[in-house]
Amino acid sequence: MNTRNLLRSCAAAAVLAAILYVAGKSLAQFLGLNDPVAGFFAQSPGIGDTGLLLVWAVGHCDGVDGPVVMLAKKAIETGNVNLVLPWVRAEDEAEITHAFDHAMSVRKLGPQARELADRHFFETLVRIHRAGEGAPFTGLKPAGRDLGPAIPAADRALEDGSVDTVVRLVTDAVARGIRERFQAAWSKRRFDPNDVEAGREYVEAYVPYIHFVERLYGMAKESAHGHSHESGQSVAHVH
Image 1 (tube, rainbow, N blue to C red):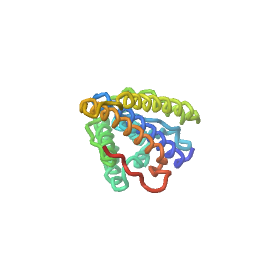
Image 2: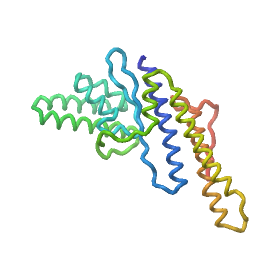
Image 3: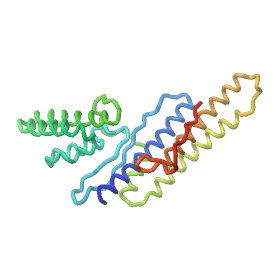
Image 4: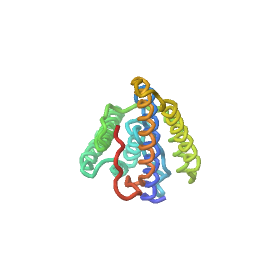
């Protein structure tokens, strides 16, 4: 698999994770729960003959077992900073290269220096990567966080060459989510116009239903490059 196809596959996995995130967020809003932790990642096969893993992450790029740190470790092992540069903006390459060169120099001072240098480089890389996404950096997160069923399935699909299992998994989850929200709104749609509280209950069921469908459809229509397949721009359904 060449680099271009690899990135396209990774982008598709990112869209999948985003769809599931919106589904979970909408459900949380409907049930009155706190916003769920949304973070998924998928791995892709190696690049060329190097056997490197390029891992696409949404929300888990700050984990010590996440994609950015994994590639940072490989960059240090091979002395090749280019392995991590795709994860930062072009304007940030110089800062990352400087941090990498500094870490490689400090590592020569001994085991303790190596550990400190590696940690500093990992944190610098993840911080700048997240800044490029407009996300805050609150420190590296521990390994072993639960990724749920979707992203491991997306990972296996990229290894096996078949996305059928992922499609079934996501389709079933989306169908359940739509039906549940539809039923909630449908069951409350007939109310006495003078019963304001009953009307409010209907609105509280209607809005999550409409937003859920709208957001999922909007993301489903986007290509892997983030552009809609439909001409023109859709107008958001505002409530």
